[in-house]
Image (spheres, chains in turn orange, blue, red):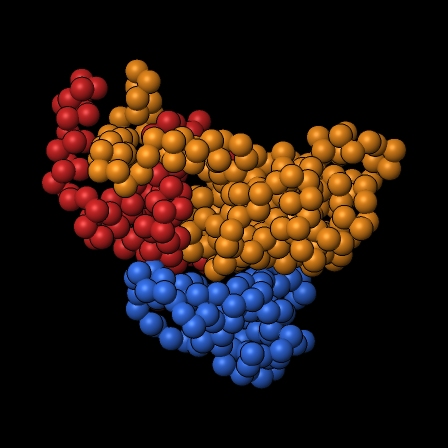
Length: 201
Length: 97
Length: 99
């Protein structure tokens, strides 16, 4: 898929689908099926989301054991507590890495991702290669991202096949005991929230 | 609810056509119920404009990677969880709890 | 086995970790899809089903699949016709100075 992507030309892509979605938009507005503000709100909604939200949830959980408990038992409530709007009606589950367990998230059937929290998934997450391989050879996939869990660490792959969106709560890096929450936020990468890697240290 | 956490289950080897949320690589495979996620409208009916009611129980089902792939590279403890609707599961045997 | 989208466990090459900059029409495709969902005119599973049934699934980019699926559903529901979308898209491309 990537590599095949159509490039912008003079501010507009050459993909015929760019014209088709503009056509669909114009027709839906003309017929009153959608309104301009509805489309704009919908664009703003997604633009407001990014992996920074996930980083905030993780850093707070690292600082505060009770928040971690809430994040793991009711991730939507935890997200609401930090002013985020978790997706409805999909469930949102956060899975915890420990010294003995490493979690990895994939969606083999499409590209389910906690978009309401983290925004759009990265291209590689949507790639046919990741979707095909992450379930069968998760360790090889993580090696490609520069991370190799030790053999005595259990790798758990989560294939989000239905109505749940998953995020990883990574392990807090060693030597960060004295860091403030806003410094910890900076360590949490998007890749570590999907589990293909671990946070910066 | 038909299943409880820890129950051994098997994913039906059904080739039901149309939109389903059970991936092919899990069909016929043995695993265990990890937890109940909740009840949701049936996606197989939602996909064609129906209500999906009554709602169907959705479970997180665990599988040992070694049971899914003959050539799995990695420790025997490695596993995979997927979300599977109850109507895709039957009681199984032999899976770890 | 399942359809073309059911690819878990299939062999695959190295993962391209490059990221393309999201284009405006892709944002729009995303937004229209969400807005139609908000209006109850489309469900996630209908959209997934429409994507899975695209003959050109493997040849299209992610948001191209989204657009094709949204179009398919709107036509299926009688909200728009293929002809009017074709016509308007052609006129937009002419306006852009494309053949």
